[in-house]
Length: 386
Image (tube, rainbow, N blue to C red; front, side, top):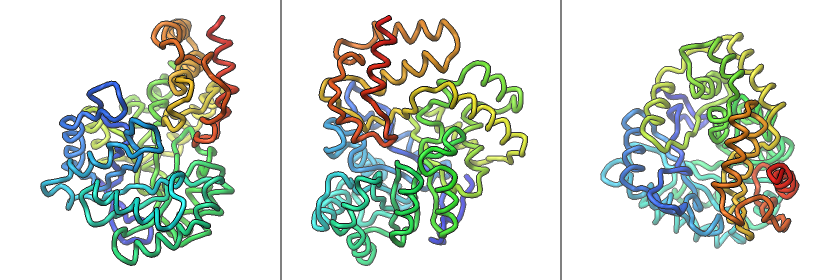
């Protein structure tokens, strides 16, 4: 596993990080983590050289993002017995929940107990954006980070981000951050913080962590056949995952790439790529840009399936609706469109479909992508009603 010096921290982190947002499940609920399988995946990744494990307060919560999830307790248990000493743990402050510095300290202590550790190596202010940045500063978050670093409960302070570049630049300049985590891939070059944000962070000596390297699986599962052919023609020895990860590993502004691995074959494939990321030529980057432009033109809804919009008060399965809607338009083939119609009408239950939307816009306040969910629900309901 190749490693890189992480920003100005002087520490070496693996190119690949293990993300604990989409762990394998053994039941229908988000909190039903398959502990034996998930533990095997995580430990195999560590054996392969991964030394960065990312989780969060609300990951795998059965009650939405306002409730603590099962991901942190899973990490604590999976790293027991000597595994903790092999890795850096990253988790996140739920910025939308805490209202005071006192609450922030209480949440951090709660997380330390759940993770069965006395320190968080990399602590992030979770999903900072316009609506949270100023309130968090007013609540004392920056002073809290200083205090927690001083007393050793956290070693490095950073933030994860979902908003416009201008907001990212304001946040970067507003504190002595050591690292940032952004959504970045060869499709999202100009989306949210994008390349400009990545380069700004690096210019200030910050480490840069990438999430959604395959855009929630979109760059594999939704790739049109003609674009698959373009990529295969340029590099027949590379899989679609190779293209996604190698593009990032060959970007000088990227230090570490997170991947949510839910199966052993994904772990092995990702380890192999990170062990030998190779060199992308200018011609390879040009091919990726061709595919990016074509996909952006065809994809109507830029949803990553993160689930922050859930639970919907009306019970609408928002990410699933968007998934089949995008399939219908991006995959330019009638069998795929027929499959999308089938999934929408027969595989989704009453109340889960787009016509159940109440237009309350609660989901739009939570969406990291800032999507006009209610508007898209109207379009999806109209399309599939036909």
